[in-house]
Amino acid sequence: MSPSGARGGGRGETSRLDESDVRVRPGRGTRPRSKRRPDHADAEAAMVVAVDRGRWTCAPDEDPSRRVVAMRARELGRTPVVVGDRVDLVGDVSGGDDALARIVRVAERSSVLRRTADDTDPYERVVVANASHLVIVTALADPVPRTGFVDRALVAAYAGGLTPVLCLTKADLADPAEFAGNYAELDLPVVVTRSDRDPGELREVVTGRVSALIGHSGVGKSTLVNTLVPDADRAVGVVSGVGKGRHTSTSAVALPLPDHSGWVVDTPGIRSFGLAHIAPDDVVAAFGDLAAAIEECPRGCAHLGPPSDPECALDTEVAAGRLGPGRLDALRRVLTALRTPAWETGG
Ligand SMILES: Nc1nc2c(ncn2[C@@H]2O[C@H](COP(=O)(O)OP(=O)(O)OP(=O)(O)O)[C@@H](O)[C@H]2O)c(=O)[nH]1
Ligand SMILES: [Zn+2]
Image 1 (tube, helix red, strand yellow):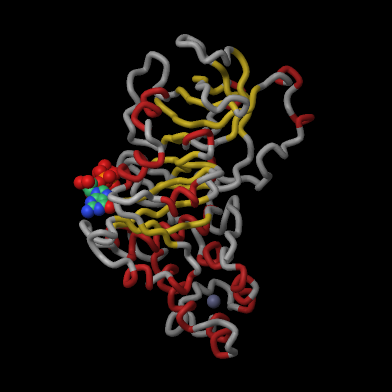
Image 2: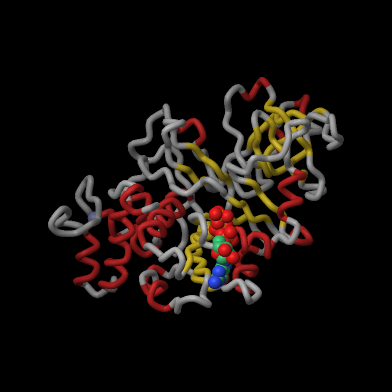
């Protein structure tokens, strides 16, 4: 399975909502330098690691241990700039206590993770950009694991261009086999952790890349983050904006793994995903072997099979022996998450 890549302006997307959408998918550093504004020829490339009340904390590529606080240049208008965004900085990039740089450019995003609209904010918004992996953290017990949350996270990952990984915590309390079995047919990588053992498998997953970690309260996500990033609390303190007080930790924050071996983006307070504008095709497209098959489906097919989608081509694939029935069942359960409100699934 390979993720389809994030797609801008997916079906049903309205212009009102695509303000922070993905545009194209260039690799890091592939942006032609000639496109820079001449007066920003000396701009410094950096990654946004935290956002707090109109201030963006950035880690320059040249020295990722440095922190530069920046504002958004006027010429960017209201262009959204979120954690994980690749930006160009000008101005005072010294990182001193009173230094304030300017973000003059935001690179096209390779992936987007959206959080859902809520009562205080009617719009779905991108909360993490450019993460290559989404680690879906679920406890095997206390609280009891639910497929609803995982399925919604999977949809968000597949549609946003992130590779999902299921991380099952508290393996000292329950056997992972049964819950993991729900996902066996989806080729979803699964790592199992328990707080009395080193999370070696998870460390391997997150090393060398930017990964977002998502999970409900109490599943042990903080325990994992603190193990992966031994000085996570200090790192969060460091990214608090200049003169702006401590980061309130209600939004995403990128934390550096030791020796700059990657970044984990913790997402406190982000526990549900914006799925409203995702089409079933966006999800199926993440499964390389099935993307071609659904071209035979009737228009508007939601790929759920009979009775709602009696002519879905995926059933033909099963009949022809090209697709295992278990794999189709698993995919359809995930697709059903698209139609289920978050409050019904705890997702
Ligand atoms: N038995 C067991 N308990 C664990 C494990 N990991 C974490 N816990 C406990 O589960 C509780 C929640 O852990 P946290 O790491 O705070 O969970 P969280 O997901 O960050 O939760 P919030 O801080 O509320 O977002 C704590 O009491 C931990 O000690 C584990 O592997 N096994
Ligand atoms: Zn179909």
